[in-house]
Length: 394
Image (tube, rainbow, N blue to C red; front, side, top):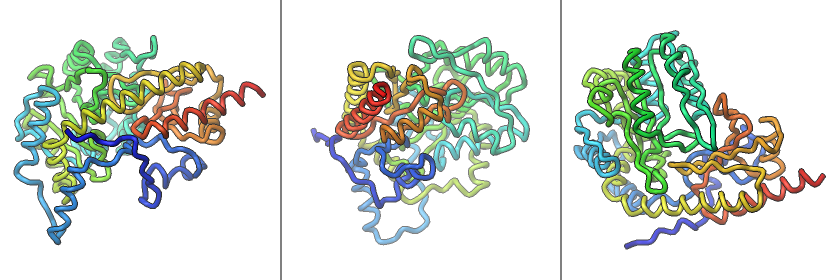
């Protein structure tokens, strides 16, 4: 069995990496450790790189459709990874999950319709409704005992106000919370009761930690499946977000057809020469690589938790159920959101995502990406420790 090296430090300068190019624009720094954008600093799996190289060797990169096995490979992966039986006739390409969410908003809601999200949440959830002239409605998650819980009283109240679409983040980003069957069922029943379409972003579903199991929302029951559109992708799982390849699952034929039509209306339905091929290769050959990557990520999370408990106890670590993103509670530092961001960037020289950008409930938190070599994490934590010690000894 091949052993993959996740300790390798890869220099991403001069590759137009998002996390490097935009440091100055968004944080006013170009000399900090970038642990913010949710991609991995691990080498993309060799079987994907080899497939891309072989495709390049064909000599022609013309217009290319997904192969006949594209949706079949996805269906097999969903069965293997999530015990979810889905016919490949209800699976189709999407040019990224966020783009898919935007297309779903346009396909299934009208201007000024209400769209419900739960904060704190991945920032595009907050911006997409307004960008498409819809009304954003918020169901704030409750943070208790170092984890997130759903306020169901408020959830139903907001649905009853005339909400047309609910966008679920499952697993939750930034908190790494995996919603359980009871929580999912309760949300779904309320959405069906109030005739609210459910759109579930499950992009982190493959990255379950500690032996936990992801439950696709649409898997709960045939009735729920008829009211749900699910978005997934291999991008986070296998570190290929730059290939802009995702997919959606809609077992309701009307929803599936309408989503396909909306994608086609913007000429976004064909995919790209590498994205669909990489998806197929990843799902067919990626089991062992993913198992090793998840183990390394788990060890990184434990490293972060233990280091902070021992050396930076003023910060509290929210250990995630899934993903490679760790939510850090920095509220005891007594800084405003702006001050916290400035402190981490310019004093500690570590760039994480500012919790305030995730909406209500994110103030005083930072989101740390641990999908990187452990040596990088250690350096970042040491810099944070040193900066905090200096702050409190002045």
